[in-house]
Image (cartoon, rainbow, N blue to C red; front, top):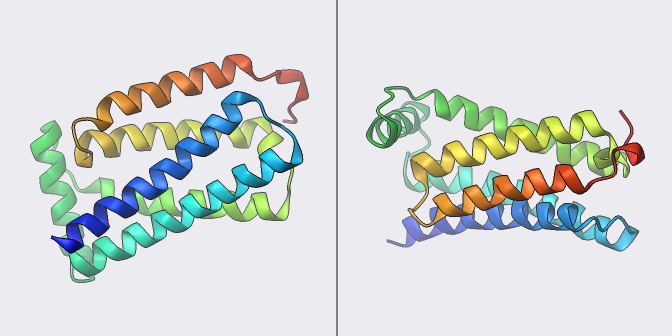
Length: 166
């Protein structure tokens, strides 16, 4: 019971950090203090994701890639009808993308202002969060994903494009 709560809790932690960063972006707060908070939320979310993967591998899969793949395959089949465990590999790619984006933001403080990388990362995250929620999330997360999607659309519409670098 504790292990399941820890797996769920770490997932909720990284999702909350992701959404927190999106909210700051959507609000258009571009001052240095807001950007520091956003960068720390993004970093905490990335670390929360890594912790979530470690906790899931330790408690649920016994550090076995094969067991994790089978778990993802069975959940995906049950929830979507698609018989594939490729979501595990997508999860690994997601972790690499988040880690790289986090490191780049710490190296270049203006990193989120570069429009193409920003929207590439945000579109990838939105897609992956929605997919993960459809397979692994509790029922109440599904409306939350719709809200996040709407938030991204509002964010895109509200950001002054002339201020972004390509």
